Amino acid sequence: MTRDGGPGATGVDPQQLWLGPAQPRRGRRPAFSREAITSAAVALADAEGLEAVTMRRVAERVGAGVMSLYSYAPDKETLLELMVDHVSGELPTTPAPTGDWRADLRAIAQIQRDLMLRHPWLPAALSTRRVPGPNTLAFLERALAALRPTGLDGTARLEAFAQLTAFVAGHVAHEIAQSSAARSPDRSAAEARYLAAVAADGHHPELAEALSAPGRPLTPEATFSRFLNRLIDGLGTD
Amino acid sequence: MTRDGGPGATGVDPQQLWLGPAQPRRGRRPAFSREAITSAAVALADAEGLEAVTMRRVAERVGAGVMSLYSYAPDKETLLELMVDHVSGELPTTPAPTGDWRADLRAIAQIQRDLMLRHPWLPAALSTRRVPGPNTLAFLERALAALRPTGLDGTARLEAFAQLTAFVAGHVAHEIAQSSAARSPDRSAAEARYLAAVAADGHHPELAEALSAPGRPLTPEATFSRFLNRLIDGLGTD
DNA sequence: CTCTATTTTCGTACACTGTACGAGAATAGA
DNA sequence: TCTATTCTCGTACAGTGTACGAAAATAGAG
Image 1: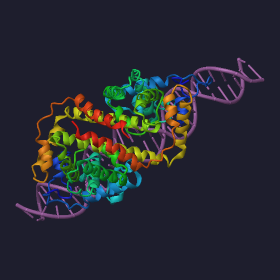
Image 2: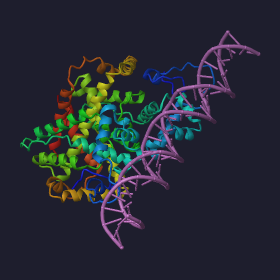
Image 3: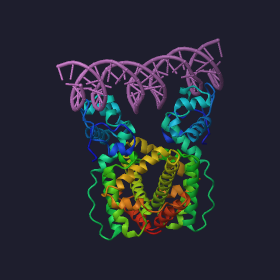
């Protein structure tokens, strides 16, 4: 099952999409594959960002007509879901739970962060609710196992994982915004001037003090694990 | 300062946008106001969601030609920033810090959540980085004051506030997605069937167990404060 | 008053988006 | 060979943000 596959799943029903039928052994033979189309879309997003992923540009990369894509995914939203699950296939198999669930969760979050840094469009793509595909589910399975020693019940473990993922996505999105702001200095310099002006107006003493603090020698990694530790410490308690 | 505003701010420079010039006392008199346009856009988003906010539909509501909007905001992205700061004006003045910074932060987060529930498009609008307008800055100022007793330095307090806001936005987005999923039962029933099928395949024992847990009698409020407490507990520690 | 500079209004136009439709090509089984 | 089925993809359409520029309105100068 889960044929990597050709067309045939023409519904948005997740069951049709992910466990789609492999039977159609009649009619014209597919010229492309869902895999190829998804990969092309991912490559495009990696290279030029999520907004570059248009049906036309994906078709161009694949060498297909635009409308042919619709034989493999019923609409663009679904293609995004395919993309998310596609890159989730890169998530390395986590080691078996060590018993130290905090350490295990830290490792899981680091893995997620690495993936998101490799595919900077991923946090944005995750911001709308998605149906988990097989790769996502496999990772979820391992995360739930890691959460078992917390003593939380099933629902709470699902919630904790969602919470963790949302946190990582949010943090990485912030990280990416920071670093890409550094790459367009005009905009961020203007913003800094604006904030400085506000701080100097006398009505924002707290902001003024916060902005006059010494520069931050902290690496993104350090900030990430600091926040991560805080969150994880809280997860186990009920 | 911060004239509510006629046109004149034609740059995306935040200084021009928020502290824009009030001088232009020549030329044709503006027929509308930035306030009116922003309010119309907010009303539209409240009623029909963020994707209904198009320049054409906003102009229609205001009674202006489409291109006239560009005299008040240089582009749509900026209009979204104006919308965010506009509704931030509804944030009630927080009481003076009580000394119990955890309680103060809880109150602040609750205020943010209330605002986001009143304007369900707000979490999505916050998901891209925005320059804080005057209303946002006023609220930030109070939040920084509430964080003072933590002993964190300025930079860390800014980070903590960003963290808190991101958390609230993420959580409310999740809440909204849940409740709107309940309103389209076809989709969510199909999703439930799919997950049940996956859980029954024998390869996802953890998921199977998590899904078979007893139903959740927890109100969204209870879940929110549980997660909130966890996060806040972690914020103070360095 | 007229003249000019300035500012706002907004119709038209353009490039771009996702995708509905349907004609044609290719295939498998009868 | 005929028919049902499936995929391919050109064309078309409604919708998007916004560039451009002509017309209208205003303020101050002469």
